[in-house]
Length: 408
Image (spheres, rainbow, N blue to C red):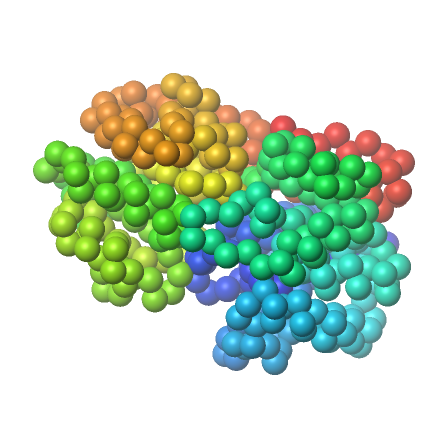
C-alpha cells in the first residue's frame, strides 16, 4: 500500500512563481522535501494557501505529488494575530478537502508555527502521527527591527510539547528546543542542495551579461538590517574599493527593488554612493539564482541572527567560498580557512575585508570552493535529506520502534 504524506506549509507555497521574501528558504526546503520523498515511493500532498487568485487550486508536483492551495485567504492574513484567529477556519477547510478526496495519510508534517496550529488539529481528528518543523522560533531568532507577537511565542511552545516528533536543521537548535520540551523526540536534518542545479559554471556569460571584467562577490537574501546587508554596504561605502570589483545583490521581497534601484531609502542612498560597485537585481526564481552562484568567487553572509542557511550551502555546492558570521545556519557550514571564513556578527568590517581578500586571491577562494563543494556532495544533497526524513517518518509512525539514525 502506498504511503501518503501530508505536508502543511501555509506560509510558504513551494511552487510560488517567484522565490524570495521572509519565507524563501523554507519554500525551497519544502519543495525539495516533497519532490525527493517521491523518489523513495511516498505520495506527497503539500497543502498551502492560495496567495494569488490566478494560481490554480491544485497543481501536479512530480509523479506522486501535488500542491493543494486552499482558496479564499488572499490578502486576509497580514499579522500573527490574523493567523492565530483564523487557525480553526483554515483547519476545517483543510479537513473538508481531505474528507472530500477520501485521503488516508501515513504522517502529517507541518512547517513553521502557523502550519503547526492547523496540523495539530488535523492529526488529532485523523488519528495520524504529527511531525513539526518549527523553523527559527521567535524567541531565538529575533534580529534588530524584528517584531514577534506574544501569540506566536505562546503557540510555538505549545506545539513543541504536542508533536510526536520535531525536526530541526541544526544541532544547536535541538539543544534549545530540548530545554522547552524535554520529552519530545528531536531529529536533526540539515537542509540539502540540488546539485543538478547548483554547481560550478563558466563565469564568462554572467560577466558579459553584467558587463563585468571579473567575477563578482555575491549576496543572496533579504534586504533588511537584520540580515546585515545595510551594515555591509555602510562598510563598503567607507572603504577604498578596487575599480573592477562588483557586489551583486540578489533577493528581497517583490517590490524591494525597482529597475535596479532599492526602494528602501537607506539602501538607495548607499547604492547611490557606491555607484557601479554594487548591483541590485531583486528577487528571482530559484533556478536563476544558481547561475549567479556558480559564476561567483565569494558569497558573503553577514546575517545578524540565525538563518536556515540555504544561500550558504547552495553557494558551497556551486564551488564558492563563503565568508559569514558566527550565527546558526551560517557558521555551522563553514570550516574556517578550509571552506570559507567566519567572523563575529558585530564585525561586518572584518567580514568585508575577508571577502575582499579572497576575491583578490581567486586561486585561494577557488580552493576553498572546491572543498566546500566536495563536502556538500558527500553529505548534504537533497537525496541525503530525503533519506534522513524517510527514517524519521518511519520511526515516528511506528511509535519509536525503529532507530532513525539521522543528523550530521
